[in-house]
Image 1: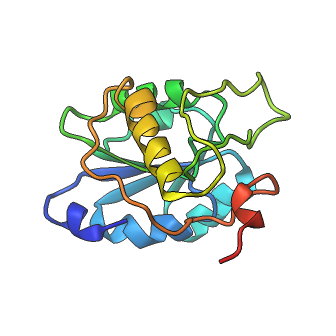
Image 2: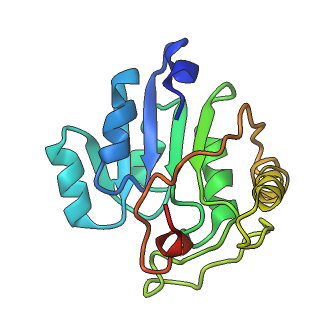
Amino acid sequence: LDADVLEGSLHLGALDVGAGDGSLTAAFAPLFGSVLATEMTAPLVCRLRDEGFQGVVTDSIEHSVVQQTACDVAFVLNVLDRCKDPELLLEQVHELLPEDGWLVVSVVLPATQSDAAYSRGKSQLKWSVRGDMKHTAADFEGAAASLVLDLLRPAGFTPLRVARAPYLCAGDRFSPVAALDA
């Protein structure tokens, strides 16, 4: 995340969807007046609260605490490829943000999906992001274009920047990154 992009303007608050242990939340929190962090498990929300963040146990943007929290930036870091319905999540985040709000997304490209809550609720819906796992520059470029054209724009977002960066999370046991050499 390039903090210079965010530092130039006043921000009400941030929403961190699927904040995990809060290590990434802590990195951007100083840029905001308040941060609401969501996570699916109570132990992680307890850790987020211990770190001083407002945390809520939920796997839905439609949770009442999320809906009542003013935010103008939403972080969806390492979540789109793991949630039940990526398209719905983006639509809900778009509805939550003000017209001039920002979405910050991080996802592994070329894209694969792994249902982080496979034992809970409905099956994961497959997204329309294309790309294969050959790990060439062309595959990354094609997957990035597909992420923008097939997922972000239909949800109402206009990307300001797409960047290749190191993976921001250890992932899970199904993560293709775990098999790559550094």
